[in-house]
Image 1 (tube, rainbow, N blue to C red):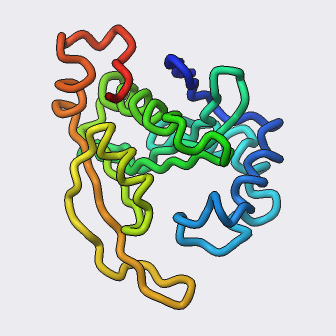
Image 2: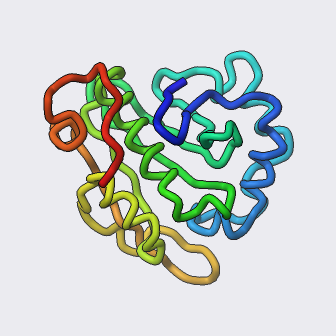
Length: 193
């Protein structure tokens, strides 16, 4: 587990499956994931949480449940592709509980994950993308310190049209200069300003 001020990142549990399915079947929650509903086929989460399933191993990829200060699951954060020699991975996140949108949980979860990926796992670069229409996500990523690196023009087709994606990236020196200016990676990173 990775514990922050208001959120904790923990592995998913079998009892989280109904919540996961509800989030992934909610069109408003999944609107920026470029996928039709339902996003996840029946019994996929059961396989993911089985011993050796992708939600149980945190090496090249990892899948975290974002839990708020009351212990309630509110979202999902994952990374994929963390392997030598590049040590560059993609980050994905959503807050599944709509009443938790805009409350700062997402940026805090991202900061916790970046601190762990850079300072514990040795990642050299973390990147993510978001649709150009997802302004809330863009504000959150920029607040955390991600740098806008470019636009993937018309890279996804859904809802009868082509859509652009914005690519963001962050390096450990950028992250640590902002969240660990004293150079110590043993204390909790500061919250995003």
